[in-house]
Image 1: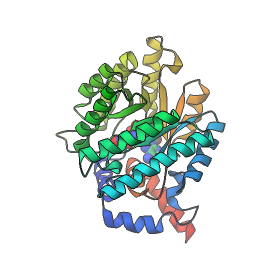
Image 2: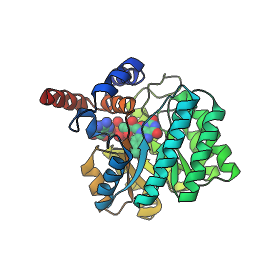
Image 3: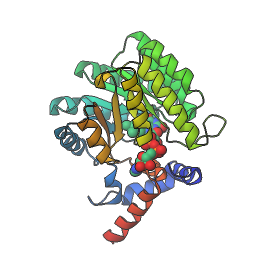
Image 4: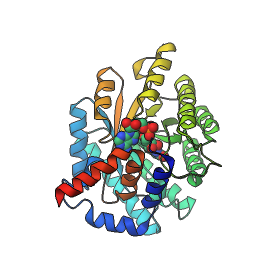
Length: 311
Ligand code: FDA
């Protein structure tokens, strides 16, 4: 994990509208451009091509149409329609029927009802196409509304969805128990946003410790948990715990992000664990990309080198 000050700086850049606009204009113009290492492309066709390539090597995918923090109901409605189209495209292409979506892309920053209705529309299309919908988790302020929306939809009867819990949040043990009690599938991650120490652990050791505790809760009682990390120590702890409990390898899955630790992706899948790659695509790649830079100093060097090479 990058040091916390740098991570906070990249998180602040991720939220800057001006920098975002500039980057979207210049960042992904050429196919070799720097964002491409982490993002599958701009179009649905490119995302499906990336999914096919991953599936050929034995991995499954979840497709994420990049976008977050939309400020108008029109933009939220457009994202909802685009997700509907994506689900149809995935179904007709015959690739893994699994998508990831952010509720602020569907209007959660505007009001809860807008994002609720939009997620419900997506779930209706997904149900008809037998597609799974993972609701990503965003800044801490959105955690309760996100869990509340998922919980309400679950109680109405929507079943083909899951959510994400972040181990850096102090509240997460309660949230994990709440999702286990409902039967909602959880993807466990460390957490990628800039949060205050009131709500989140400031130290990597604490975040890691919490990750292991939550992983154990999920493996012991959760519905098909997803352990999403590139951290070899977290992966080893997961394998060890699963083996100690005599769990089948397919009782849970590992997940990693597109373009990160491909060596580990191949070795875990080769060892017989179900493995899913999170495949982000679209033009709104900037905040996602900034969070990836903030996670690892070497990524900044990679960007600088590719910019210099492209000059
Ligand atoms: P950590 O940051 O400690 O890194 C461990 C090691 O992994 C590093 O030393 C490095 O080797 C490698 N690594 C990690 N990040 C890297 C990077 N960007 N580039 C290159 N190497 C890197 N977060 C969130 O808040 N809400 C969400 O919904 C999701 N969704 C999600 C889905 C999936 C499938 C994954 C894998 C992750 C997320 N995340 C997320 C992001 C998550 O919270 C976290 O920020 C990153 O996974 C990095 O944390 P690690 O667990 O990898 O550990």
